Amino acid sequence: MESSLPMTDAAMPAIILVEPQMGENIGAAARAMLNFGLTDLRLVAPRDGWPNERAVAMASRADIVLENTRVYATTGDAIADLQHVYATTARPRDVIKKVATPRAAAAELRGHTAAGTATGILFGKESVGLSKEDVTLADTIISVPLNPDFSSINLAQAVLLVGYEWFQAGDETPPVRINNAERPANKAELAHLFARIEQELDARGYFDPILQRKQVILQNMRNMFQRLGLMESDVRAFQGIIKGLTMKVKENRDDGDKP
Image 1 (cartoon, helix red, strand yellow):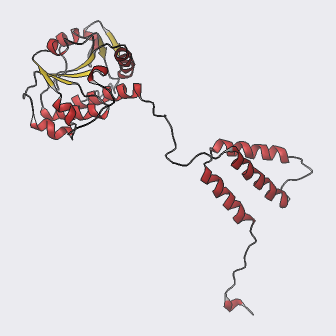
Image 2 (tube, helix red, strand yellow):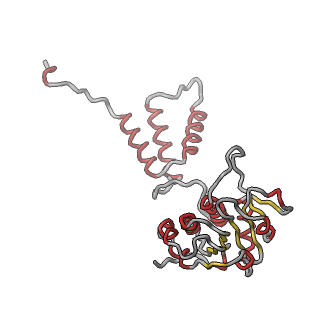
Image 3 (cartoon, helix red, strand yellow):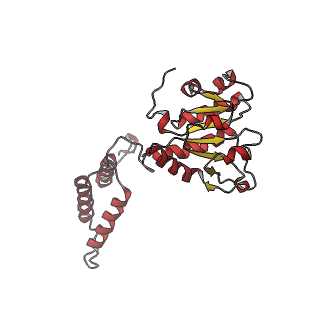
């Protein structure tokens, strides 16, 4: 299955699974990777060999990741072409290294790849994680802040967390947006709405001339509507409401009520 990606493997960190034990976990990790545009998957001595049919089934069509997967005998071999390596571990106290959260590491990784530095992230096997020897090969440790009373996450979840932060560090999606194709109301439409409201209120003697608070009331009204961030259709809806409210009340009498 062919797939196009926005960047080459050289412009993204390699995901290195050290001695993964189950094909299903490799497949789930591959799926998580492709969600965030990562395709360079490296396996160090996978227990059940490679390729693995269970990985294919669990990857849910992340074929490009599996097809490009490379297998190595040792961690040293897997990172030989890399210049800066991160190690994910829940036990950072065993060695003296810089420890970063996934978010901080993602920002650093973006900087490294922008400078042309080849990077990779080590993930340990499901049962015991990375060995101290593997962590020693890394430049920086990634430690995920979790509930101290329950900090157990599986291999695919760890890849997902780190991959998500990597993607977010380069994503330009607005943090908040209106899921609507309509445009916001322009100032002319708002001015027409305000004038209509003022006209109808005036016609009904709403503003007490003795109190002389008309301008204050209108100013507060305008500020309120400006805060609402009205869309084009919202202004039309308000115009319709005003029209409905200002229509004469129709008498509804059944024929039986007529004299």
